[in-house]
Image (cartoon, rainbow, N blue to C red; front, side):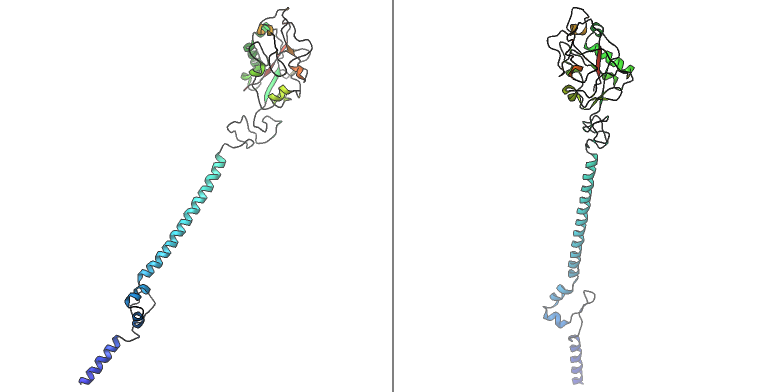
Length: 291
């Protein structure tokens, strides 16, 4: 009996440590024998290879990948936003001449680069110039300010746009016509739409593209002069009293300078034939649209 008991005890002990005994399945599938665990350094090796820390590490790695993915996504979104902002900035900026929008520094913008329409390729608008249908003696002009008033009244009477800005092309002893009239960069046209000059600079450089012989009512003026007191470069005629600054109509006063509306040469503003003339004469005035 004692012998049988020893055999049974030996068998039970052997069963508890049998090489095929499986350890706890930490990773949900893999199995490790106690002998393998023992050969790898015991339970410590089993923990490193099968514990949740490895899964956690793997999970952490996955989490890091996810984090990296989120970072990439965030950067892509940021990049896309930046791209959108750049596009928005381009469309919301100051723009450019010819884009069809009225931007800072432009007088007009008709969406094209045609220099021969109402708005040129520099986005400067055209301006009107005409010769008055009426003639005036200097004492009826009454000075530069009154001359401007005459131009404005006639421009309004003729239904011309911007009539309140008109000034007379007239110089006196204190001021030159080129310093009074707005120096427009756009072209100058007559009331009938015919172009006179591409710009104020071209007007002074000459010759004109067409004579300034159309009145505010679109009728043609011919056979008479226009008071100017002004040289081809826009300066005042030197040494002249300009009929006492356009207030005197004395026969003996030969200080009146005039131009010829029928001509396109520099004689349109300073006629080399007949100047100066008596202040008793009655002539037209040139009127220029202003700013």
